[in-house]
Length: 103
Image (tube, rainbow, N blue to C red; front, side, top):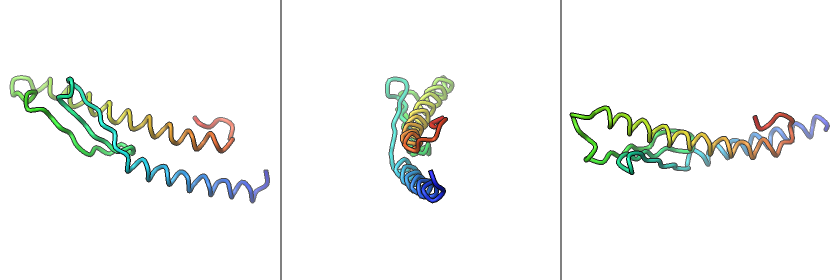
């Protein structure tokens, strides 16, 4: 492959990567815990958009349960967002034909 072709392929890949990142930032992922008592929405970029908590799990006597439910839902939502982002970037790097990619 000559240098001009490589530079063109790199520029094209950069444009595609930027587009993927923009699309991920617009995408919303939702996860819940406690049977839907805590729900978290994040973007595909991993930014937390909202956390909804059912009033029935809010108790001064069991703050630890609420903390666990929130943490679980946040981890699930951000984990799902990371997986989606990794899958999308993997599609891009697989098309480049560079050995060792995707990672």
